[in-house]
Length: 82
Image (cartoon, rainbow, N blue to C red; front, side):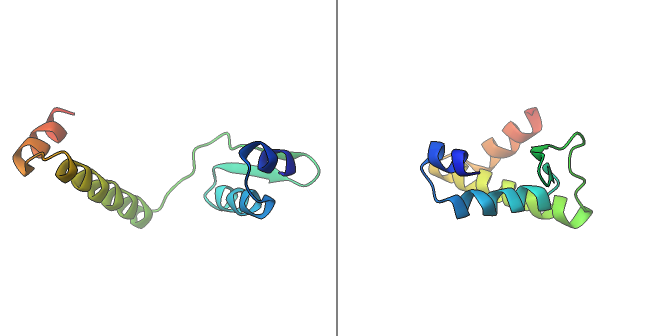
């Protein structure tokens, strides 16, 4: 963590908090003395968490569409096209 904090030029506590969050989300697995690694299985999200994340992503998409002056109709068409 110390080395990563130096590389990123951030406080070591910031890196430590990020590791705690990543582990809590199931993205990484930490073993005392052996370090951390990316989890072999993707984290399983609850239905509620998936809905919340999707809601957030849709809100971000709508904000970006407004910044680009994209109409609601254009946005719907783009989403339907994939």
